[in-house]
Image (cartoon, rainbow, N blue to C red; front, side, top):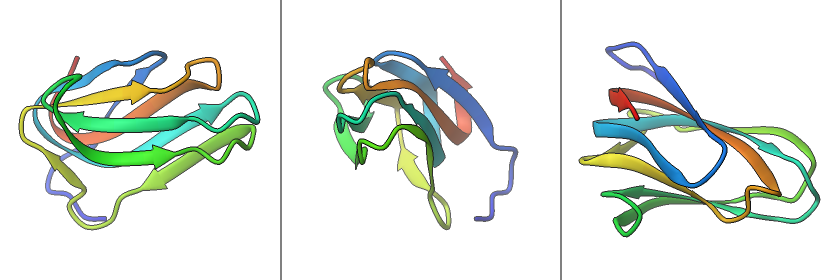
Length: 102
């Protein structure tokens, strides 16, 4: 992974906008609290925006991460994260370039 600017982070514990403005998702770190699988859905353009990434969690208790290669996933408007169950996934940290943490 190679970026021309510093990577920033924003942690969410419930569904919401993580980043305002044009940005790229560089990685994701989340905590799975139960053995029940959940889904993290990343959208560009708010809660009803375009889905840019869907991450089904494996239902394995512990910390998990996903590093996105190259220039990451581009979101032109914002980065909105839907956590299907914040009982199963208790936090989601978005690593991003550009934009501003919400």
